[in-house]
Image (cartoon, rainbow, N blue to C red; front, side):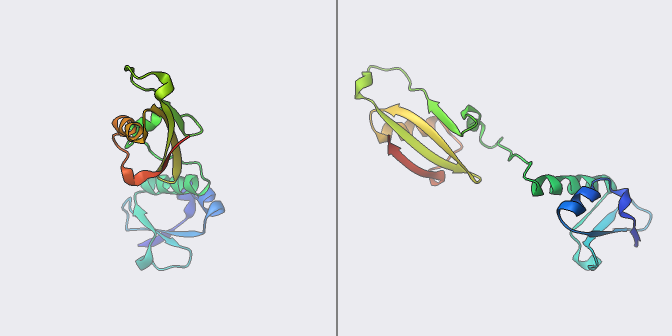
Amino acid sequence: MFRVDSSRFNNYPAYEFNLEHLDFYQVGNKDLYIVCRAGGSTDDCVQTGSQEYINGWLYGAVQAACGQLRKRMESYPELRNYDEDHQYDMNREPDDVPGNELGRYEIVFKVHEDHYYCFADAVNMDEALGQFFKHHPNITYGMVVDHMEV
């Protein structure tokens, strides 16, 4: 194992600018690198992998440090209905209940660190929550922060 110049990793300057200094070591003549904090021991490495993998890791770390990442929402496809303010006005399924007998309900829930606001027209809170969970199969009651008539 021997220390190599950081210029092999084109994403390192941005990483160094935003985070910290690193040392890079190559294992033999293989495409395998060990990354350590500057002056640190290889026994306490922060990352290992191929040159391509290390470049990707450096890039991702910079994106995260700069707040440019968006959380993946594939686990919650129902969130596609929400606007940029994380609000969604859920349409009520048509039935015989006159509009003047309906109340307006808000259900606030949290996914990752973001709050979402769902509005529903319903006869009561039980119906509003029923509609909500029918249209939000991946949201659990434990994720609900608040629910109220508005």
